[in-house]
Image (cartoon, rainbow, N blue to C red; front, side, top):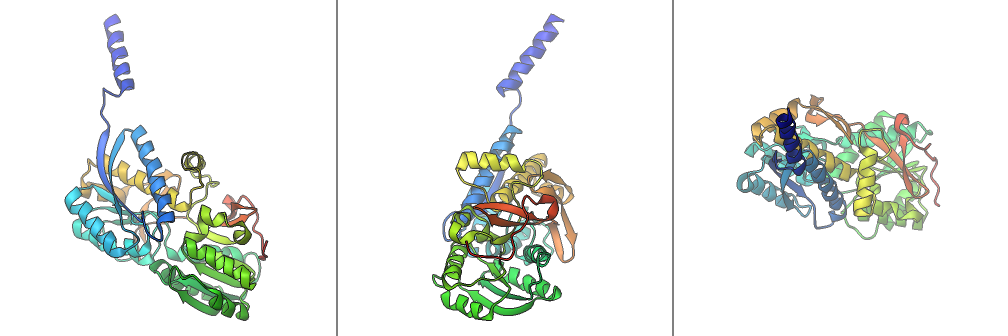
Length: 385
């Protein structure tokens, strides 16, 4: 009996020291925008993945992560994916960040038979081509517009809407679906203004929109443009009943910090820290403690995408085909709520994610819709602070 107890004690010590069982190793790729104009949002994805790797290690999954910088350019994203697939021999890839890059890379995933999990890119087409190896965690572009318009139409009776958006895959795709949905809900379009990303001056366009006096201004922009648009809207006195930001640049800590122009702006988002999805609040606290800033939804999406890909690949012995099949059959529950990749409508391997609407109130993002997640009542109509 003493010998048996001694053996158990030895086993316990070995487990505690980590020498009894070695971690499961898995090699994965991560394509992100690390440099270039979208780098500030790309940083959120990188930070989210960093936290995911820490948690995976605690679970005994040691990820050998190969990072690639696409600089926001589709041709670089494709080259990066091909390198990961052919030279690095990864079991799966998470990324890229932007719609243009993710849409370009998607075809390569099927060509090289490497599972690709897209964390945040919204262009609908990415999961509408029937690709077997492409999976998407976040909700696609049409949900960005429908969720925020449903919220606003429940607050008042706006009749007209103006669109101003970046000439990017994300901007064009989101506004296309927004227009279709607005027409169904009886909103009359009074302006359609597309601009080149990074333009320094929107005053003439905004002045034209002001003359049309729209009830709603719907914007799709990355970070710098979002801030510039709101600064110059205030400068010329553009005051609709609501400014609606479709994710991206309207959901970052940098936009939040622009207190004189960001207050009361609505935005659609994939994630907030105050939802009751398992681990969401803890993720927020850990992120702020480690990186000294608030996470955007991009960070949460990247965290969850990396967790799902790593756990699936590890359980599949890093076999690409088994990983693909396991992604197809699996279901997860975590900081993004329930995740399951299904086919519906025109989509293939698309997670039917429930989006949220938030509004900046007194220098803080507050969830205002759906009601079951709301922390504050929405403030409507808009007025400058």
